[in-house]
Length: 118
Image 1 (tube, rainbow, N blue to C red):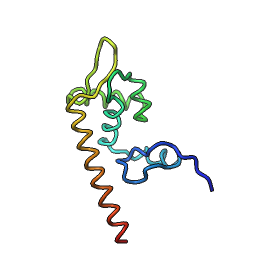
Image 2 (spheres, rainbow, N blue to C red; image 1 turned 180 degrees about the horizontal axis):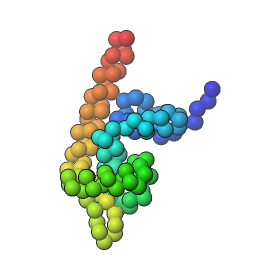
Image 3 (tube, rainbow, N blue to C red; image 1 turned 90 degrees about the horizontal axis):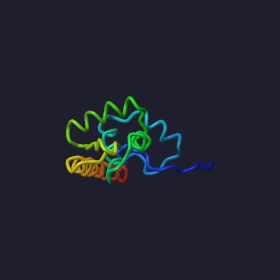
């Protein structure tokens, strides 16, 4: 059986690094809010990202994106430039991403230890 490999599964990186598209689609349904927030911040990292690009990169529909953008802007994790109508991850948002990725790596390492012992 052959699988077409897609990009990384966005679930904290500790389930599968690469998965066929159908695994990714199934996994996308069960993201928690922290996973969604991290994907939005990652997508906006570097700045000058439009709503459309954020929705596409974070796999969100418009209403989901709108709800999360308001919360991220209010918490100063994301900055909105009204002139260019684009978003950028703030320093606080980058610290959040660093912490999120650090915790994900720690979980992945622990899972690898359990796999080796099992």
